[in-house]
Image 1 (cartoon, rainbow, N blue to C red):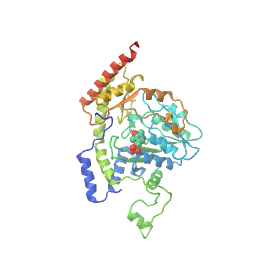
Image 2: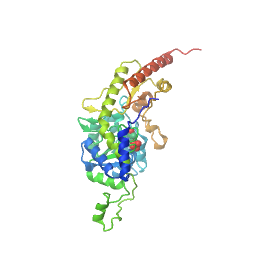
Image 3: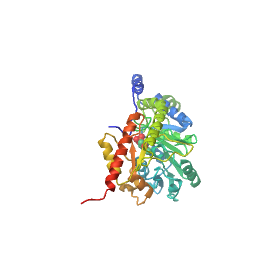
Image 4: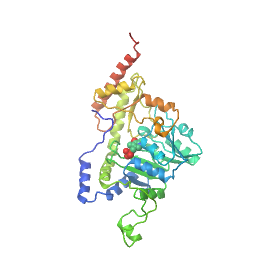
Length: 387
Ligand SMILES: *Cc1c(COP(=O)(O)O)cnc(C)c1O
C-alpha cells in the first residue's frame, strides 16, 4: 500500500537513540534541551519562548490553561480542525465555537473568524490547513484589535511562513506536533511557543507537576539545602518529552530541509499531472510571500463520486483520506452551526499520499489511478438510469 502519511526514519535516528541508551539517561535531559533550542532557531525566536511536551495535544491543553480559559468563555476554531483542539477547549468547561472555512483552501478567512466573535470570546485557535498559512496575518490583526488571545495550532506547519515570519509565531502561543505522521517526527512530541517568555516559563512548570524549579539539582540546591525538596504552585500533571524522543527529533530537524524540498516537488508533480484534468480540482496557487510545508496534498471531486474514487484507489493499493472530519457535526460539542464552506469542502476533498519517500513513479501511479477512476466514475454517474 502507498500511505497518505509516512515518516522517514533510518540509521541516523537509530544511532541517536542508541547513543541515548548508552548514556543511561533516557529521561528529559540534554537532548530535549537541544531539540527545543534547534526548533527555536528554526522559528527565529528566543530559546526562552519555546518549550517541549509529549504531544501537541497535551501542549494545546496546557495552552488553554495558560490563557486562563474557563466556564463561560468561548474559543473560535475552524470546524475543519483536529478533535484534540476542540477537546482542549471543552475540557476546561469553555465552549468551542466552530467557524466556517474557504471551501478551496479549507482555512478560515478573517471574515469567517470575525463572524463568530462575541463578548465571550477568549481566544481564536486556527490551524494552517495542510501547511498553507492562510489569512493568519489578518487573523492576528483581528485578534489584537479585539483583545482576544491568538493560539495557533501549527501542527501542519512545521516550516510554513508569510513574508519570512514562521506560522505559529503570529499570535500569543503556537503549537507544533512531532507525532509519527508529521513531517519531522520525534515518534511523539510537541513544541509550545509563547510570545511572552514568562508564559513559556509558566508552561515549563505546568508540564512538570507545577513545580517551581525544573532545572535539575543545581538550581534546586540554590533554593533548598536539600535538593530533593520542592515547591508546587499549581496542581499540574506531567507532560514532558524524554531524551529518546528528542534525539530522534534533533536528527529529523536536521533533515527537514530535504523533506520540504521533496514535498514541494511532489506537489508540483501532482499539479502538473492533475491540474488540467476535467472533474479534478487542485489546490489554488499560494499567495505571494506564503511558504507551505506541503504537509497535505488534496484534490476536490464531485461529491457524488468522491467516496467511490477513494474505494477505487484503495483497491489499487493507494490510501487516501479526508482531514479533518467536521467538528460542528460531532454531537458531543453541541454545535448547531450551519457552515456551508466547510460542508462543501468535506463533501469533495480527498487527500492523496504526500510524504518525502514517494518516488516520481509513485506520484505518477497515484495520479494515473485517480484520473482513471474519476473518468470512469463520472461516466457512470452521469449515464441515464436504466430499467
Ligand atoms: C497532528 C495534529 C495534532 C495533534 O498532535 P499530537 O502531537 O499527535 O497530539 C493537532 N492538530 C493538528 C492540526 C495536527 O495535525
